[in-house]
Image (cartoon, rainbow, N blue to C red; front, side, top):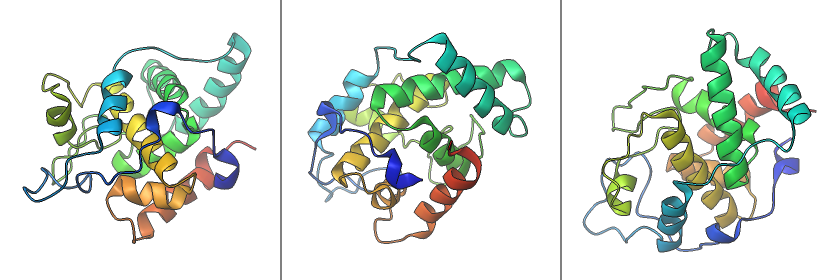
Length: 198
C-alpha cells in the first residue's frame, strides 16, 4: 500500500520552496517565481550516475513479476525488459518505489514513449520542456527513455519529500493540481491493483 512505500528522503531533494508552476503549463508565466534551485540542482546532478538491482536474484524476481504485468501494454519482450530495467534504475537512484513510477507512467502516458500532451508534456512520465530551459540543457531529448525517466523520477521524489511522504499530495503536485484529488486517486488505484507487490 502507498503508506508502506515511503522511503527516506534523499539529501539532494529536501527543498521546500514553491516550483515555477504546474507541469502542464507549457512555459512559466512571467510573474511566476523561479523554480526551486535545489530541485534544479538535483535534476542537473541526476543526469548521470547509474543505479540498479542489489543482486541477480532480486533482478530476476522483479523483472519476471513486472514483466508479466506489463506484457499486455508492451508486447515486445526486449522493449519491455529495457523499459523495466530503466524504470528500476531511475527509481532506485531517486529513491522512489519503481512500482509507483510504473503507476505514474500508466496514468500519464499509457506506456507510450513518444506521447506528447496537448500542452507539450513529453514521454512516458510527461515531463514539460521548460525543465530543459531552466537547466540550460536544451539538447536533452525528453522522448528518450532514460532521459525522460531521469527527469520524471527526480521531480516525483522532490514532491514526495516536499510533502513529507504524503503520496497523494506529491502526486497531485506532479500533476500540477495540488488541491484536486482525481489524478492521485487514479495513480494510487493503478498502484494497488496492477503494480503493488505484497
